[in-house]
Image (cartoon, rainbow, N blue to C red; front, side):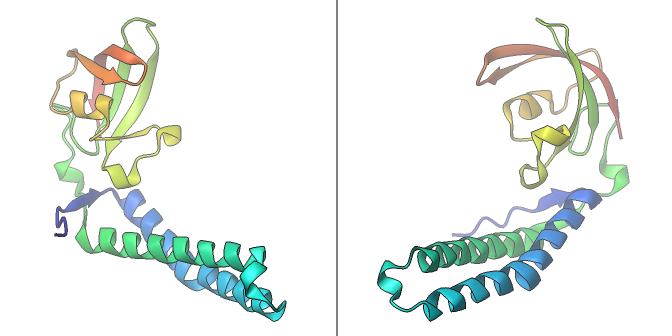
Amino acid sequence: MTDEKEVLLTKEGLDKLETELEFLKSVKREEVAERIKQAIAFGDISENSEYEDAKNEQAFIEGRIITLEQTLKKARLMEDNEIRTDVVSLGSKVRLKEMKSGREFNVTVVSSVECKLRDGKISDESPVGRAAMGKKVNSVFQAETPAGVLKYKILKVEK
């Protein structure tokens, strides 16, 4: 059974996935095919680690291509008017305050396929993202994280 759930993406997220897919199809496939050819040219492939590595990389690349193609088939570009500012929603830029430490930080709530914590993009399915969804400015909520249960206050919600 396939999960045909629509995947909402920001313009930036859609562009990144399309760019990665194109790179894998046009550049990485060729590079790995060339590595396999070179490894075969060395002779006996039964004990050729370069051949094994190249075949493993090829399998990974093909799997990633399939995943990206399936994601893009289900993808729908999120319209600017779908991003709410009255409550936290997909696409919202949110200023949070961690209550215990007082640390403030910004996050953007995105779908799981485009989340990247390093860039401040958290998934709507992550503990903090899920707990924040639908909450208004000045709301305090709890999220069960790997670091334990943390309390946050929503300071700002914008597009």
